[in-house]
Length: 168
Image (cartoon, rainbow, N blue to C red; front, side, top):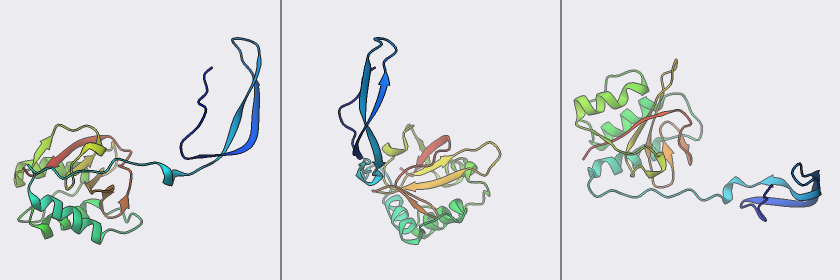
């Protein structure tokens, strides 16, 4: 067994956990981590892609300003409003389910699906669409410090990512 000498974002209590190593049969011990400080983890900041339409960055700003601390389960509604207010779309998207947002954005509004599979690598203003088997899915916009829809979050959704969309 190999143990790291330190853990980022963790606090040690001074207590030790004693165990018997199965391979060697020797008694060993490790420090006990008693508290975890999530705030110490640094998530990568997003960048502005100069090839994208400037209205996408404006949509991210509008969504950030209008978002709340907690979800109201109205992600696609809030993203539609931000896209419309920024001028990225010329009429309100009609799809009801968030998981169908990408298809409509490409077909009707001239968005392109970007070849990005990691939400953290999405440029500022990109629309991230997530799927779900029996639910409506989720949609959010990438901001400099995180992700926003009807609420703000530093982490992306845990749902399966369908695609990252932006207007070029």
